[in-house]
Length: 139
Ligand code: AMP
Ligand code: ZN
Image (tube, rainbow, N blue to C red; front, side):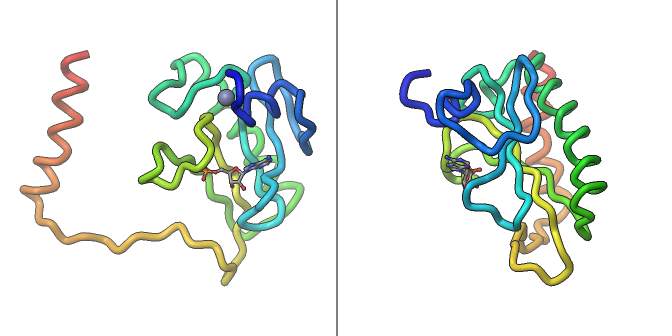
C-alpha cells in the first residue's frame, strides 16, 4: 500500500534490523523498544489490523511468533515475554499496518501491560460475551 511505512519496511524498500524473513512476513527490531530486544512481526501484504488480516496470513504470523518467542527465550534469556498486538487507536495502535509485538520482559522493568480488573458481576460478564457469541453463530 502506498505511503505505508510498514509495507515499505516489510518489502525491504526501507532498511530495517531484520531477524527473520519468509515469503509472507518480516520480523524486525522495534525502533523505539519497550525493552531492548523488542521485535515486530510484519506481514508483507498490507492489512490495517487483525480484522483485515486473512486467516491464512494470521496462521503464518502465529507460527512465526511461536518460533521467535522460543528463539528470544534461548538467545536473550529474559525473565518473561509478552506477545501482543493492538487494533485501533483506542487499543493503542499507532501504525495502521497489522503487526505483532514480541517484548522481552524483566522483573521490575518499566513496561506496563496493565488494567484494573472490573467487578461487573456474572450477568454483565455473560451479557457482554453474548454479543460476540451471537456474531460467531451468524457466520
Ligand atoms: P503500535 O502502537 O502497536 O501500533 O506499535 C507501533 C510500533 O512500531 C511502536 O512500538 C514503534 O516504536 C514501532 N515503529 C514505528 N516506526 C518504526 C520503524 N520505522 N521501524 C521500527 N519500528 C517502528
Ligand atoms: Zn502497509
